[in-house]
Length: 153
Image (tube, rainbow, N blue to C red; front, side):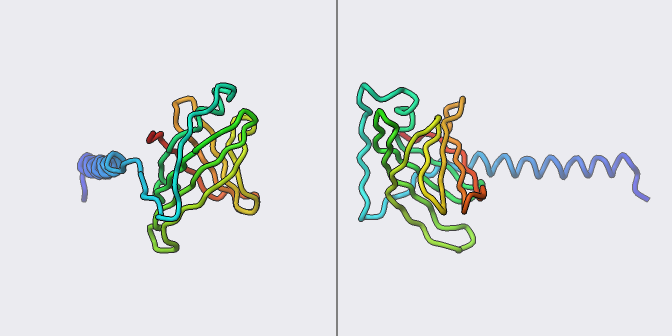
């Protein structure tokens, strides 16, 4: 018969090992900086002086992992005083091979602090109090993914 103290010590050791593996994985996961396809260029422009600071904060390159797994970058090249935004969205190879890496130009709008674009498939991003960019993807109105991005430049 197992002694209760040994069983507890064994379970505690397993929890510590799994926690260390998870922490190590999180620390090893660098902010992605994906290469652009040769047919897409990026030109980040400083916002004009009439652009509200809340809009201007989106300008730059951001990186993160959808669902903690799929690398992606969002580069907001320019924003206008009315909240119009343009940029490039990039994604890496799907971890299980469902699709290959790619990139697309986007035109979106910042409304009530949220940068969004798309209809059937919609992306929405909001700058958080800690300076990170929180993103959600919607398929036909149903939330289908999330990402937390850090500024690269």
